[in-house]
Amino acid sequence: MKVLKFEERTLSTEKIFTGKVISMQVDEVELPDGKIAKRELVKHPGAVAIIAITAERKLVLVEQFRKALERTMLEIPAGKIEPGEKPELTAIRELEEETGYRANSFKYLQTFSTSPGFADEIIHLYIAEDLEKVDQPAAGDEDEFIDVLEVTVEEAEELIANERIYDAKTVVGVWYVKSLQFD
Amino acid sequence: MKVLKFEERTLSTEKIFTGKVISMQVDEVELPDGKIAKRELVKHPGAVAIIAITAERKLVLVEQFRKALERTMLEIPAGKIEPGEKPELTAIRELEEETGYRANSFKYLQTFSTSPGFADEIIHLYIAEDLEKVDQPAAGDEDEFIDVLEVTVEEAEELIANERIYDAKTVVGVWYVKSLQFD
Image 1: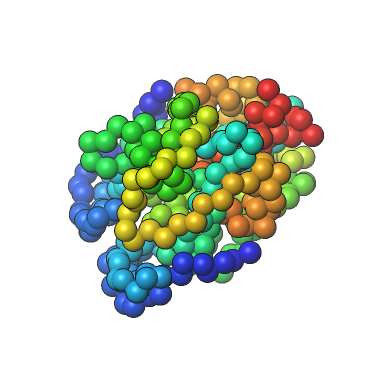
Image 2 (image 1 turned 90 degrees about the vertical axis):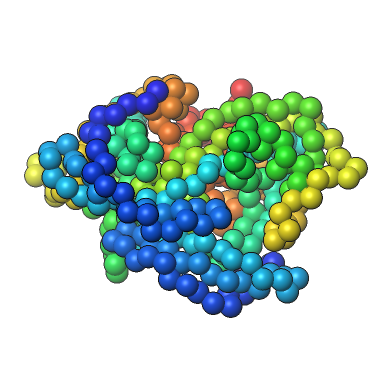
């Protein structure tokens, strides 16, 4: 449900940067009281993330270096949506490329914004179950170096506590899997 | 725990933009296999968010327009860290400015990255309980237009389902409060 209360009307847009992943612009906006303000905005094509649960009820994580944070992180599989690609197909593709798994059960869970203060990035979250290892998985991006591991919910909670898991979508994923235990 | 597996060494940095909230740069990096790649990176000062729980066990939300997403959202109170400010003081300040509440119990919960693929923004998450309304709360940013509301966990879950709550930190907050019900 999209609501527009306190809407800020765009007066002008200054393009700053157009890259391969993100672009940047500064909008001049009119506030609800008629005053003028500037908004620094990052545009992103959107992404998917996958809560992949194995037959042993373990969560599949990928380990990769994140330049933005200058550290290696453990995350649920994720990737950005290619132009014209349906999010569910992105999710199926990224799961296979990053983990070598295909899921016989793929379910949409939730969409959320990651950084509403400055970026339009949204993540579509899926749950993948009944996983099968693919013999010859599709190759991912050639500049991605990834390890795959599988952890129990209790191990994932420890990894959150010691900050090896350190991003919002993965915290959401772990707490979601935990909540299933109570249903 | 900070790990550097698959580290990408910076070869050069091109500054693109320096703004009031974010800045942007493109780094050229050396990958683990010696190849070269570019990373488009947004720098952000970091933020805090507060899970504020009233005596009636309701969650305090703020409603504001988010230009990046061109829509109004319901979020837990949050704000960016000012230069030199300790995150806990940011949290106390933002809670008062945005909601008019002061908390007699303020507890650190977790830190997480919001968009590790392109931004260094991290959010320090706090839990505020034993709330008191301040007679003359400190004023917030003059370009922020905000309404405050208080919802039960069940109402918050409905707001997630219909996407009035639409950002990762607030989903984390709601699911955390829900998990307390099982402890």
